[in-house]
Amino acid sequence: MHAPTKFALGLLAAAAVATASDVIQLKKDTFDDFVKTNDIVLAEFFAPWCGHCKALAPEYEEAATTLKEKNIKLAKIDCTEESELCQQHGVEGYPTLKVFRGLEVVSPYKGQRKAAAITSYMIKQSLPSVSELNKDNIEEFKKADKVVIVAYLDAADKASNETFSKVADKLRDEYPFGASSDAALAEAEGVTAPAIVLYKDFDEGKAVFTEKFDPEAIEKFAKTASTPLIGEVGPDTYAGYMSAGIPLAYIFAETPEERKELSEALKSIAEAQRGVINFATIDAKAFGAHAGNLNLKADKFPAFAIQDTTKNLKFPFDQEKEITADSIKKFVDDFVAGKVEPTIKSEPIPETQEGPVTVVVAKSYDDIVLDDTKDVLIEFYAPWCGHCKALAPKYDELATLYANSDFKDKVVIAKVDATQNDVPDEIQGFPTIKLYAAGAKDKPVEYSGPRTVEDLIKFISENGKYKASPPAEAEESVAASAESGSSTETGTVEEPAKETSHDEL
Image 1: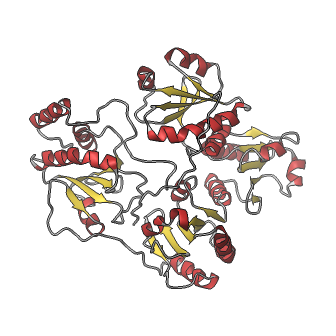
Image 2: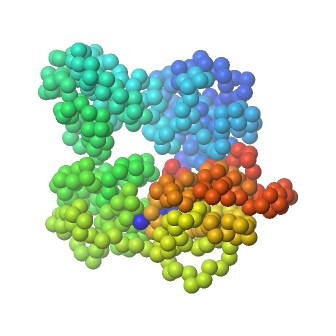
Image 3: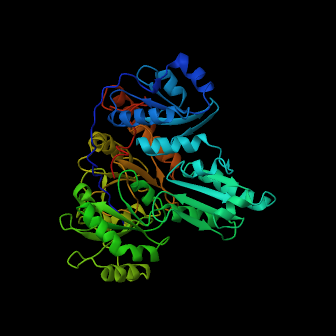
């Protein structure tokens, strides 16, 4: 299980005075016309006081300048001035970024909040799901992004063409896809149709797929071949590694020279486990605190650990042993064979539960949260989290309401310090609130609404097995207290429910 602690990247805060902006600021009376007259627009809905918006601003500006020559427009809307427009587009937190292809086709921006990531994402969005390639444009297409995927197909092979198009439609946010029916181009690449070549600007430069055209096989090939043999964990890559679906092996070292040296020493191991385990270095000076999240000592480097990113289990390599190719190979082989036991970090189980909110630790997690007879709402928090502190009195009030209701034996309001306890979910922001409904413990529902008592009651009632809500008079008292100012958050647009940052791991 994994108990993540957010730790800062230590951003370079470069302040530059711009004489002109390539980001277009829109208002209610200009928004519709602007979106209609441009093929594709990325719009940021922001608030001037929002910290994450301020961090995004220089990255967004840089991306806008880069994308200007490709006629891809970036816009921004100040929701403190254009509240009606922001509500019209369903903005519930700041910043919210959406991709517009006219007013009818709108999708959320799913990339990282870095200039390079924004640029890459929008270039992919501007292209068709599959670009038609020929001898005149294929070389330029190969350099369109860090990773591009090209199919060499026979025009008469409808099945292979349809399969490739299906995969491209699904993964268009991740890679640019192209296809060519020119046999001479295929021959120049040393392949025979049908075949797929993944071009990349790292490692060996390209990878070839010549197996049967099956969507799952092509997706697996793309994900495996596009991941660096030994990459680097950082704010731009962390989420990708966490969602890859396979374990991640961390190589902690304090200097670039040492990271390079260890990468070379462990390269053959990474090659042998490609597609089974991802390997990546991590800067121990900048991100040494993350070693503690993997149950390593955070002051003894170099270090090595494997994280099962699906089950959030952690397997630290003994830091008293030297990291060598032989020692790590044995450790990795034993891990793959299931011979290595995970370590679990937990606070002691409380002897008594004090206060209305049930305190959960790693050792009691299964007994409380996964109790299949009860709906359990649990808050994953960090002691230093300001939003968690602001939520605390309202969360106590929520727990008191249920404890004094007929649902006291059916609904549990709980919390766990996710910095001190390994939990089965990868929590990337605090607070994170989830409901584990009775009879559906394998399908927890994450809460993303306003953090008010009445909204949390509604969430439990709508998603829990028992449809539980306190008596009407209790809810009325809650509403009255909210109106009198005891609840600082309302249904109005505010910062995102989770205290997260794309610039932190």
